[in-house]
Length: 192
Image 1 (cartoon, rainbow, N blue to C red):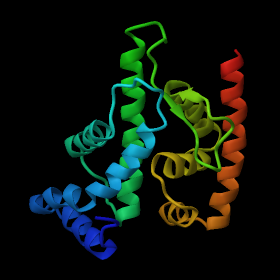
Image 2: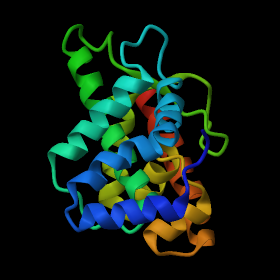
Image 3: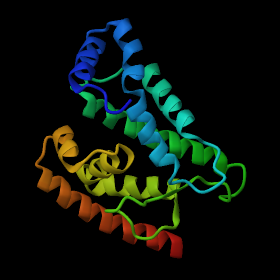
Image 4: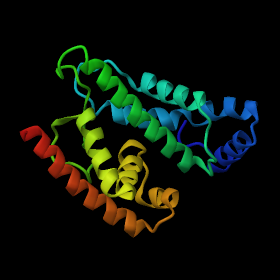
């Protein structure tokens, strides 16, 4: 099906903001394929034998969003950013749930194999990644948002810049700095 019509997506989001229930029902089917592709890319980074598939990840994230109140969303990029953040939380919650079954042995693992973030092809514990992102957010919230939008949201530099209201070059600089910082943090975690 491909990329949904951006003007149509924006129109649906504006109707959702106005509280039209029918618009909320139209939103997921309209961008489902795009979001499922994003979820699939996140799930394929997990360790083998994981129990969360792309459809479950997407549906759980969407259900969490539907249960709350949506902020004022401007366009598709903002909505995808919101879904990306929610998918991150679903992955972390799933990992925590699995981690309680066995002392860390069942933790959900993802591979940071995006070309710009690759330190190695080894799977990384999603809870360790979340902890590292939380520490990064405490130091520099914008860099954390850049990672969230690019890694979990699959947004380009330009799309990330648009969502954050900054220049694409700033996003690029933040991305590379955050990537280097995360590499060090994750490497230290695996050694420790």
